[in-house]
Image (cartoon, rainbow, N blue to C red; front, side, top):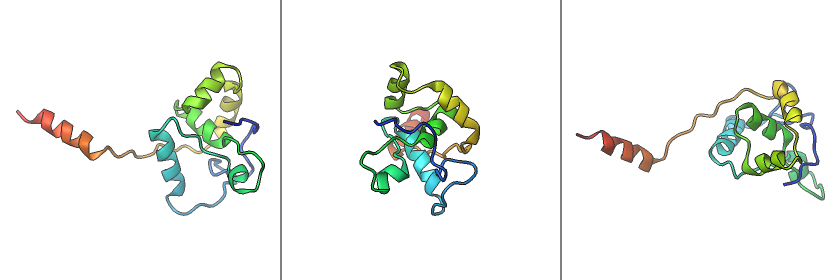
Length: 119
């Protein structure tokens, strides 16, 4: 995970103001994926699709995860070894969207629950 970026891009999709327009439901889908899978790192759209030599973690996505207490594993490791400062994430948090994704449970989890309720 590359952490060269220290703040979100000017049109980061995680910003409350100035975010790049996405298709309806796309940011919710991204957030749901990040919420369900803490091994996933969302890449900065400018480094992933802009022809950059190296990709970098999206600081907006990391700040969103920080706000919700759900940093990805790699980011938690980076914090632990001093590569990522929580003060940076804390400072960014007010600029980041407030979104709690609706997580749907898997069918087998629902089946287990319904079986445990049967007398």
